Length: 124
Image (cartoon, rainbow, N blue to C red; front, top):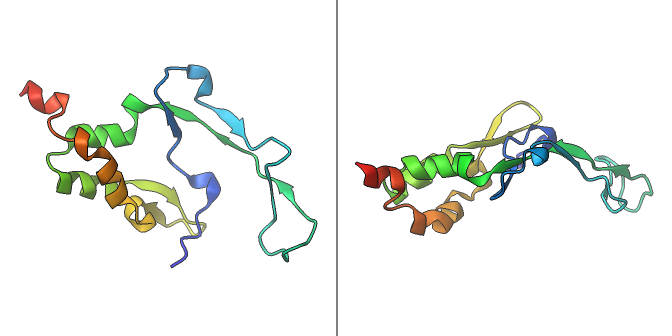
């Protein structure tokens, strides 16, 4: 199934472990090698366009993934919560989740060592 993601609708920013407010909004893809072939053109055509867009960075401790980690009670719960997170929208306006991308299991595997106990659970 093709997701047909609208690149301008991606809801997740890149994440840094540095608090630099100047990086909340940046223009990327301005370099001379950041050219793409427009959709619908034939391979080999010389028509190419700049692939620039405005993106930003979030601080890792305030990212949605870290919030889900803090609120999870088990690996199953973590996987379910990660899987239901909306990451973008299709060109037709449908929400695209982590499960739609098929990466909730991989994300859970990366976070499994951090899930128990977390700070919020040990305070109780």
